[in-house]
Structures are given as C-alpha cells and as structure tokens.
Length: 358
Image (cartoon, rainbow, N blue to C red; front, side, top):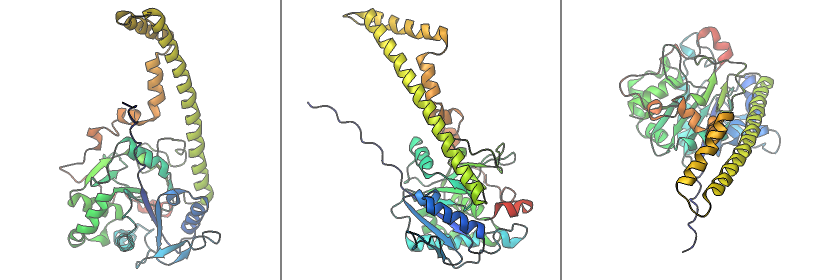
C-alpha cells in the first residue's frame, strides 16, 4: 500500500465584515478611506461592506468605484449617548436589513461588524476561530468584554457572529422587534438580547478586543498584544495607523522569538534522539526509556527540559488561551439562566460620548 495521505488542512474561515459610518463625521470617513487604501481592517476580509446614511466615495484611485452604501437611517445623533437619540439599535437594524437585502453573508462562515475606529486584524480572527474549531453551522456569537459588575458581555467595537446565528436573526428576528423597544437600546445590547431570546449561544473570547471599557485594559498602550484581534478606540487616523503598526511590529518580534525557540527546541530533541540511539544499540525497551529519562533530567538540572521549551513555544497559541480559561469549555459555555449583557451602563457613557462615537 502507498503512503497514507496527510490530512487536508482545514479551510480558512471565510469572513464577511461590515462597518457603519456616519457621512457627516469626517474622522470616520477618513479612517475608512485610509483602511481601504491599505487593504486593512474589514477590507482584508473575504467580503466587506461599508454602510452609511448617504453614499460616500471611499477612494479616488484604482478603487474609485468603492462607495459606502446608503441605508434608510439618520445616523447624526448616534454618537451622543447623553439622550435617547444616542441609542442606536434602531439605526443598526436598518444596517442589518441592508446586509440581508444584499445577500452578502451567503458565502461567509462568520459575519463581523466593526466600528470605524476599531483597529481590526482579520487574520488573527481567522486563526482564533481555527484554534477553537468553531463551526459556522452552530448558532454562536461572542462576549468580548467584562467589568466588575458584568462578567461577560458583547461590546460593540467588534461583534462576531456565526453564519447560523445571522441566519437565525434574519429568519426569526421579527420576534425581537415586536418584544423590544429598539429606540431605548444600544445596538450591541439589542443584538445580544435578541440572539439570546432566539436561543443562540453566547461563547466567550476576551482576546477579541482590547478596550478601556473592559476591566484592566489600557486604551492607549495596549496595541502591543499579539493575541488580540481588535483594539479600540482610535479616532485620529495617525493614532489609528500607529496602533496598527505597533501591533504588527510586536507580532513580528514575537514571531521571530518563537522561530528561534523552535530551532533551539529542535536541536535539543536531536541531541536526545542521538543519546537514545547510543544507549539502546540494536534493541529497544528499558534502555530507551532510561536514555530519554536521563537526557530529560540532565536538561532539567540545567534550566528547562525540552518539554518546558515546548511549553514556552506554544505559550502564545491556543494552549495559553485555554490555560487562562478563555477557550475552555467552561469559559465558552453560553449562559443559561441569566441575561449577562448589561443594558446601558457598559456602553458609551455620556461623559465619554465624544471619544467613543458610534
């Protein structure tokens, strides 16, 4: 018989990403244009869409045809949470209606809604979904934030939904419109409450977002985190780009360090293999076990065993996340008996409305 073929690599999750941009907010328009020019953020997803309250040209260059698609909603007041006009669930329902109308999600595995001032790395999201073996056929959305009062909730800077979750919302979301008052809700609270009503599971991944509203997180110095999928808020294009660059540079440094560690670990394994061969000769059995044990113990008396080196190498991968309970079954389980999403208090306090925007 021929060699056993290697298992096929899992296909990379297909992402459809969209953002809602206020046409009368110059900083948001500038941020989206800059991201499009670099092919960054939502523009490096498999499919993307920019929605606004008016058609806005996003590029004058080769992508001159790229425009923000108008939706039938007034977004003028959505950046001010000091009054009811700032509650933006109703406007975002119009955005979701447009997404449904255009059929953009049909070929996607996951749907991602991103704020204009969120620094977002789709490749990191793909890797995260791949590590947790998340299935788009399971109706799921993610809590990405926590604070002292609420242990887990979805914050609107980045929202990640499985294809099945979006289908459930499109097919049965009318129930939410009849039971909830969208005028009095922030959009992410509405979505989370609606999906929970529709029996969509809420998983937990705090690595999706770094934001000052989440407990213990910094707002201006947190971009050097290779595990985070998104960083928020960065309203000024120069600060947005700086965060993007810092994150990429830090990821590169970590990658090189891991490569070096992998090479060293490989050399240690080769040394141990040779020691094993010398000890066993033509036979195997106890001699092999003793040689391996001696080689490992010898290293342990110095600094790290080869196992320890491996543990360091995978420290930035899924095992590390699991060790913190982020990707464990317990951490990812949906809440069964309580609505864990805070209604208003977690979202864009009035005193900070000028900084947060949509």
